[in-house]
Image (cartoon, rainbow, N blue to C red; front, side, top):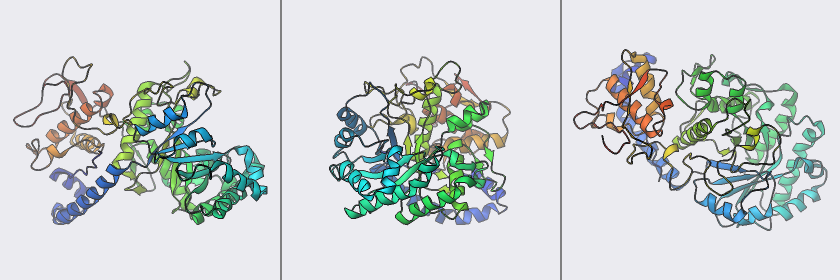
Length: 491
């Protein structure tokens, strides 16, 4: 079970909040009881919802490969994970049938080459539904049909012009069999449909697509279907390989990037890209259309000349993304909810052309073992939902703790504390009444949170950096009843 935790800050947090907003600390304290009560109510509601389902986590199931396991084995694999939705690029009947009675939501797709026939011939659309939906639904939980993939940036004007009529005919075919309200129809876009994505508040569509986009979004709005987009921080990093950009893309400690228009500080590229899409939708009057991330991922290996692919980076991106989604924090422009996100990909696709990274996005191997652990298994979700370690690491030989360096400024300590406690770790010991609340100082609270974040992140030294303000120590900082976790089995 996943427990949602809302961090309730001690006094120095409240004083910082008051200072930033030019109000008195006493005013903040006056409203705190009712605010805490509200947050507890929200926390309880979210705890129940998340414990029952993590429906915002999906995965892409590509098939450009000759070594994939049988669909039945894949269905069992998916049921052993917290993945609740699967996106297919086509409509393979064997896979759809294998997922019957699993409760897993299934997204199917039409080929780009089918779009002209779907657009011009309503009977073709009806036959497509009769062949690819009716034999399987509702035992197989088909939830969405994507008409084509990245059509708008394909350069094929004929396909672009026929995309909306094709979607309308598929929708009409669903309506004819009384499934129009059960199964949605949409299409998937690349980030290339945006002309501008930085800063996020200035997100806008490419004017050459705008008229067609308005038609597609009008359809999405009228049918309550999602706007599906493929944001990839990995590709953003490839065009800017500075270390600080990598940290920003991997949800790791970084200085953040401030949107000059809204003054919002973004701490990761994923949020920035999704909010840029929201701003683009808002700019043409469609802010209420739901955004779905149809693809995002990071390759774990690539060719020698490729910068960015590695197991460490892939594990950091996907694991931290999952933790971010589970936190239900949302994005700055869409707070308090998690965007439905389909990770790319379930398996490697060994027949894909292009550089080696294109064949190395898989979370699982053909033998059904994990390529690396990002906490998707129901029996092992720790990497994506950090918590206090209770078992020794099998590779730990000596206990280490992450502590602030001497001379670190209060501003940096506050940033470290905010970052660590905002990542889903249990900061209750440094709350009033907690075993580590005293001494009630910023330095003490930050030290505890920084160490806990490091321990909960597999003791990766990269997670004890905090903008070069922290260091590893073999000296146990625990005191009295306050125990600093070490993950070594002894504290």
